[in-house]
Image 1 (spheres, rainbow, N blue to C red):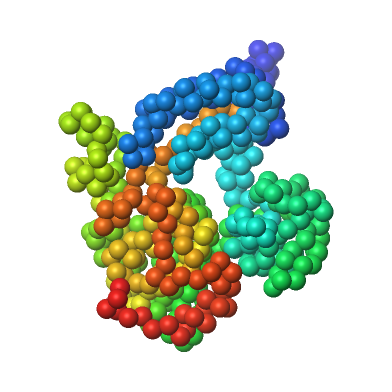
Image 2: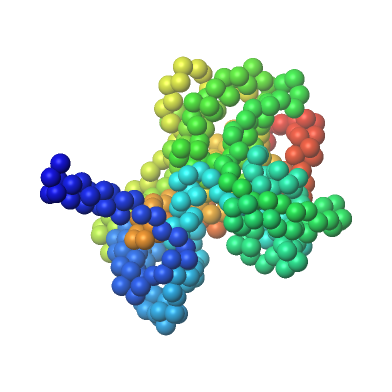
Amino acid sequence: MNKIARLGILLLFVTTVSCQKTHSDDEFITTQEKNIALKKIIRKLKKSGYAFNETFQDIKERIETNRHIIDTTVTIGSFVTVINDVLSTYNLSHLRVNTPDQMSARKKSENISLGANFSKTNDGYFVTRIVKGGVADSAGIRPGDFLIRKNEHLITSLAQLKGKLFEESRFSIKRDNQVFNRTITYFKHELFSKDTLHYISDDIAVITINTFRKKEYDRDLIASLFSKARTSKRIVLDLRSNGGGASSNVKHLLSMIIPEDTACQYFVHRSDHDAFFEKYKRFPATLKELVAYRGRVFDPLSLGWGEEIYKGEIMVMIDERSGSGGDVFPICIQDVKRGVVIGNRSLGMVLAGDRSNLNLGMSFLYPTGEFMRLGGTKLESNPCIPDVEFSREETANTSFMHDFIKTYTINKKSI
């Protein structure tokens, strides 16, 4: 092989490696790289971003107001933190920048964290859900526990709960008003438990659905679980701490229990708002007015999975970490009167969203539309209030919830 050919192969190899370069949160970021990311964020929001009557035309001004803080950041992670502080001033969900480390963990479906969902409380970080086989599960941490201290330091942020591979940390945990210490070791694990089916009585089946995320929500698996459970008198769908994902997967789950073409909710996108403004030269007075002008129906998928929909009783469990699709699904169940929702009220974080890649491995999630209940109330900032509401601790206690379900009679006249 001559020198020119070898040089060509070498250049190809270098180019391939550089294209595959991964970035980390503690990597240095230049002023030029910050400006590239900011321009992409501004352009995306102004062109496509939308929440009801919010088209983000002032995003550039908000960024410039905080330019003196942005200029002090030196790493990708610190830059993202400041930008997210700016974006949080809109007080909207589905509006944030993710760091390279966050995106890497998301793509690999693994993480170096405790493997649990948490809610911040005055007593510490309350554990709502545990990932089976994860760090917390292996250490004996349970839903309902409060994490108080890590390595003798009071836990004040979720960032403290993460660790490095094989790192050992000592946690102070409160359980049933008793405080004890436990040493845990961090290791890589799946982000979500596998969705499962089990029976709590001869005629009551529980299907646990941990997420609606693409690649994580397995439609074939969900269909098979329903096929196995279809002879049960009641199916309970456990959506506690389900943080949502793809709306098409929410529609897939709805299709298991609700006929296609059934209007469950409505939604509008930026293009609908722009068309309304173009025609009337004003913003819509209410979301209901915009939906009436150009609303889209949110309904079950046309499944075609070879079996009839399940027509038995439905109950849905949610908690304070159920959000996005985990908000949408139980509200659909309430609005079409298909079943009973129990647990603790959801997050109330429901906007249609899209994701755009930025430079240096960062990713930008931004809202593109609003959901509206059949009665005219928007879902964003309006959590699902269960038909039967329990405390945070009761909702996290699976045995308590199952005992209630086994004795609860569904009054079909009230749903």
